[in-house]
Amino acid sequence: MKILLLDANLSLASIRCVFYLEFWDVKWIFFLLLGLNLIAVGLFCLLMKLAFNKRVFEKQRASQHRNILFQLQIVTQEIERRRIGRDLHDRISNKLSLILLKLNNEYPTDQLETDMIQILVAIRNMAHDLNPPFQSDSPLHLMIIYQIEKLKPAYSIHKTIRIYCNGGESGNFKIQIIRIVQELMTNIVKHAKATEVGVDIRISPKGIYLSIEDNGIGQIRLKEGQGYYNIKNRLFFLKGVFKIKKNRQCGTKIILLIPHETQDNSS
Image 1 (cartoon, rainbow, N blue to C red):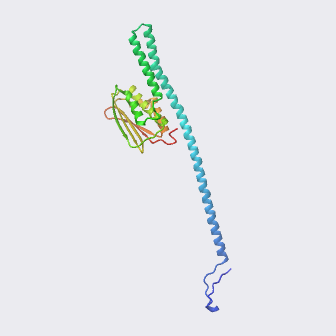
Image 2: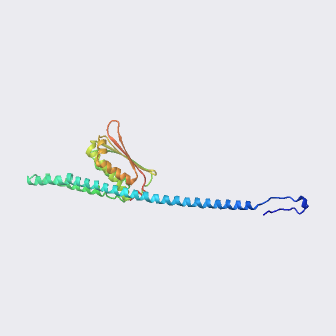
Image 3: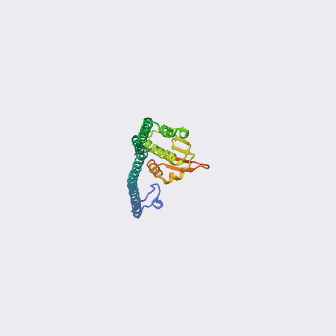
């Protein structure tokens, strides 16, 4: 098929052809458009498949993450049970046995009363450790200081607190951090042989910075003990990290870096 554009003002001898559009040109354009459409459909299908694969991968990763959290939770609970059992044996059972022995040997009443008061204090401290008061309402930094202050008067406490934003953390999030602080305090009391403790708390839009420093010798014991793995498990929940630094002269500095609470680390 040919299309001729004619100029009416010219004679037939001077007809000017503007352009020719052959049948094969139309066919070529048709296949070109068809090919472009097929490419567009193919790209769309590819993008849809990639999006689907991404969703599947994210679901699998979330499922694996939940399984890991579940396993770590079991391990952490088992460590907590062992710690509670050890505390009941060391702090309560032994003292009760000692009181029973004193009763059989007719010790002075004043001495027995002192021992009973010590047991009551130990039970109260254990109850507070298991369920720190006001964990849902109190600011995180006050809860940390409350735990650190328990080291008085046996230790000299140095505190630095810098709050640049409101945390708004949930009770569960805060209790995980408090458990870590308790582990560090236990290491200081049992192994560090320290006389001074320093705590630095910074809460900023980037996250939570917490360092606890002593002048003792407890770094190696922390790495070898169950408390070390308990801290690692809890930080996995919180998506945080921690570093152990040995001071030049003496003492250990533990640095915790924890991001603000998200949906993943709030459960």
